[in-house]
Length: 382
Image (cartoon, rainbow, N blue to C red; front, side):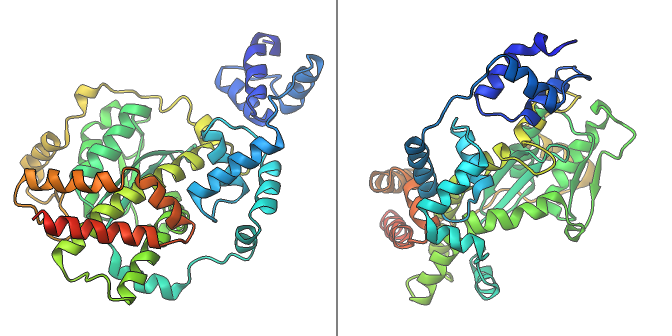
């Protein structure tokens, strides 16, 4: 089959900013096994006079400037290109890198010198471990297929928000690989029950190995930390140093965890969009590589809700699951008190994304003021 049969696919992808390599891979996915090399695609395009949709310099500068406001200093040309692509702006890494260097020179210099958070800061940050992120990554495409942010890691939330959602969206994985943490018991239990629905049943349905085995997901955490977690924790450390935050107080711990979970969730969502749309050298773009999902698909009826799955687990394995819980002590005596506090806080901070924007750009005062206000409102309403 010739390239002419895929002319619309080739032209549309190229006009939208995709590379010849990405187009070649897409044609392979569509069943074309020969004649779809990058060279042939380039020649095919040239003969038909194809042109990209042009993003002018002033429009690119505006888009990059807004993206930096939302992402902070640690999105280099690759991740920034991915972040822009997630917004529908397809431009080359070269142009994005040049724009970043020209418009945001201090941030560019910091990235070049690898001026990340120091080890001494990390040691102190362990005292502020008020949330947990869980991420699931497809081993082939490296696409982040599921994630959740919670105050304390637990089996039910991980199963419902990460495993179940990922399987329903992308299909049944042949093997799930995790570390030895007990928070994955329910996920592994259900993966084992559904093992007969996998495409390749010669593999073990799951594998538990030490995190020191350098899983792909373990290499993601430094990327998440420097772009989301460290800026927030630095703001908390400043408050602790100024004795403006008492982490021994249960109400304070509850408010810190509640606000930090909400804000960091937005940061992780932004990271996820950029990661899944950025180009991994020698491999491709995760979203394109994972476009067809897993070969085995299962119906939603086979995946019960978290509570029902937990009951099945307890019947067979005993009561060893961790359930959702709060960090600190929930101070509210009634749902009415909680609703009143949430309403008052929302009237002051209707968009926590703006608070995150300041925080990732190392302006910590808005986050600190926001947290102090939340603590004060919570005290008044309890």
